[in-house]
Length: 93
Image (cartoon, rainbow, N blue to C red; front, side, top):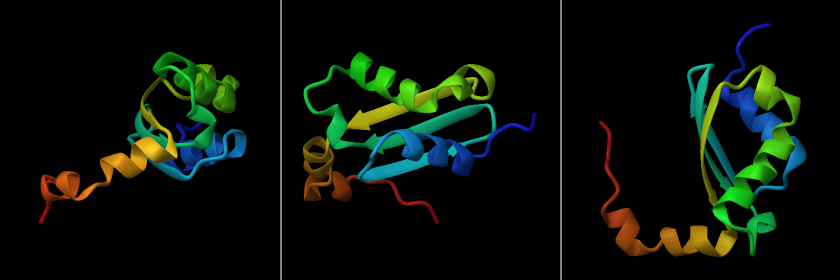
């Protein structure tokens, strides 16, 4: 079975979890995801990750070897997007 692409992982997560923002990067074996979902309200970081793992189901064990996640509620994401954060963002040329 071919390694999944970041688009595949993004589609898998979106299929099982309603997301406001979903960004996935990776190389087929190791992925990094930014996941913003109202379903994370009131959940601990561990519970949020477990919710994403449930969305991925068996694919997490069979296809995705490493997934690092940043899981935020819409309010947490909005707070991060404040002007102070964008001023310190790094720019790549």
